[in-house]
Length: 307
Image (cartoon, rainbow, N blue to C red):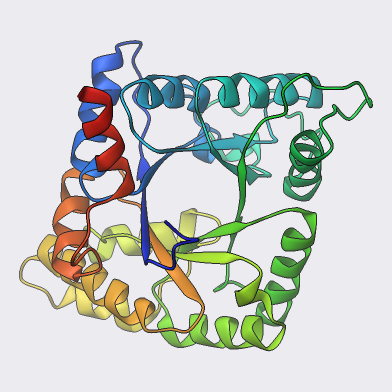
């Protein structure tokens, strides 16, 4: 979808605390009608849930497009390289490489952090597996994985001037698409994109801007204070405070953000994140108008799989 030049939509699937596959399908159902691929998070925030590779296995078998997230926090290079081959064998075609939050922010702070890789070295390792057909040890891979490599970026947190250069390093390491953290400050993001264009990065990588609906001013303040990498301007919080129906206002704000971000040169799509509020994603994407005239790739895959 990105290579075709169309504005792409991905959505984050919040993994269940369950071993029931129907819980995954229930969460995916409202997202798959509007998203080209679904991100299966990998213990985000250092909290344990169903694994990303498990979710991708379930979703690919019924025709969903998936983005397999890999956090470097929890596994060493032996386990990660093996998981990459396993994911590719199950039909996963997109991988998001993340360093991962520290274990201290999660619900099991006594866990041992691994961090054998960071996002840059992980990108290089998977690129080597794909393009050179070998493990890091040099041992040959019989059938290399066919993968589209991605990474994350935080354009709206300091040091601002360093963020485009950090993006350039991820592209050099192998990133072909980027999904950003939540964008609530469009002027600040526009400055990031202007610098990225100056460096020619917009022609080397597909950038998907992260968006999501706020539930309330209280929730926005909590996110700004407690979630690493989140920047929410004061005027956004004031807008939420003045709303008679904060949930509806948060939804309208998200729609407006998508429409504004779409107009920024170099933005190739949006990544919609709505924690435990997946039912809103379909409404937000449809009302934003970004899918006008087309169906999501993931929906077509599912229709073909069911046929």
